[in-house]
Amino acid sequence: MTMLSSRAGTKGVPRADRERQVLAAATEEFGRRGFEATTMAAIATRVGVTKPLLHQYFGSKQDLYLACLDPVGDRLLDAIRNAMAGHGTGAPPTPLRVLHALFDALDGRREAWFVLYDPSLPPGSDAAHRAAHYRDAIDDLAATGAAELLRTAGSGDPLDADALKYAWRGLCTALIRWWINHPDQTPEAMTRRCARLAAASHAILAADNGHT
Amino acid sequence: MTMLSSRAGTKGVPRADRERQVLAAATEEFGRRGFEATTMAAIATRVGVTKPLLHQYFGSKQDLYLACLDPVGDRLLDAIRNAMAGHGTGAPPTPLRVLHALFDALDGRREAWFVLYDPSLPPGSDAAHRAAHYRDAIDDLAATGAAELLRTAGSGDPLDADALKYAWRGLCTALIRWWINHPDQTPEAMTRRCARLAAASHAILAADNGHT
DNA sequence: AATGAACTTACCCAGCGGTAAATTACCCTA
DNA sequence: TAGGGTAATTTACCGCTGGGTAAGTTCATT
Image (cartoon, rainbow over all chains, first blue to last red; front, side, top):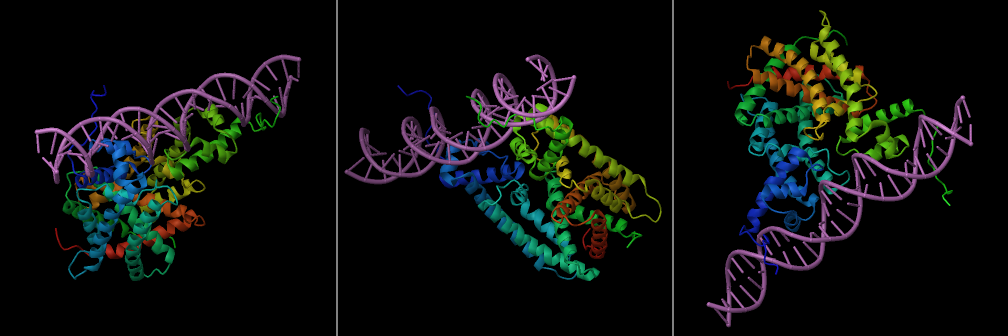
């Protein structure tokens, strides 16, 4: 007598495909709303599937997050490393090259940036540690850039370098957030825009301040 | 038989005092962890009190958030307005004056900035609208600054101005976050540091990029 | 003693992470 | 061509946490 409308059973989608769908949806959701605010059911709904399937395929919510984190972290790290390595004469300055690399790496998955920089990860968790690991690796690259920049400017204060690192990261984050709100912009258009903004800022910063 | 250890009853703290304590604790907690991750019980515990008291004094969680938001928003808005108004010759450039004003306004309540810029507010809620209202007011000020800056640089693209607004906000946020991690730094020290960083960045940005 | 202000205990309810068990579809073999 | 195994998926549930409330308990004042 249990013949009625049980929509259970396979839908013919092989596991590998489903996993790709889930990973894409989860990455976007985690990036948009953050780990804590993201619910398993929401991800499942996006894919047209129910909660238990996610758990069966990926384990816990944290496991799913980690599965999203690794590709994103590796991709970004690679992009930045390459951008900082290739500095030929006549090429744009390093910060702009890094921005271009970021926009390229994030094209089609712009929210992925915020998977890495998610403040809502449970403190002390595996997820938080792994995310911090990736962030630290990126920060190390930024730190060499910052130190180099400050050395040429004659400031030896290590705190200055640290603050500059933070500021740079904040800049990138803000630009990416703006990009998410303007979906039609290509990575190249973004890079050119950043170059214009840098040039414009250059003008105002030329005015010196009057106190030590 | 209900004689045992009932720690209920007044502790002699008048309502106005308690409300101030709660507001201070809530502002810090909301700023640190964000609206969603903050729990009523946590705030109550910080004050040495229990959950129902907060509800009795402030109503819902959102109401308490709003009670925190208003003073913070007003204070910041005032600070920025004043900083942008007073530009005498020989004074530091506007961005630096704004930063100094922010550091001053946030001294002793540095996390308050993140009460305004909390991404975890329930979308569509009163709280989200009011916070957006304050952010928009601040953004309007930033927009005039950005437009002025870009006009002198010869770029008429309105999207550039919008992006610059975002970038500036991101910079401020990043610097404040760094400041929170370095509690010993005074507002003046922060301002000087920002001036140094600006000067250093100025150096690298002087290098022009090779493509249109 | 009585009134009211300050405060707590004990509870309800919804939402979410997670699991067990059942259900359906597909494919391979005899 | 029936039937059995297995992969894909659901329904129904548990337990905890967190917002919110009702009702009671203590203290101070008049």
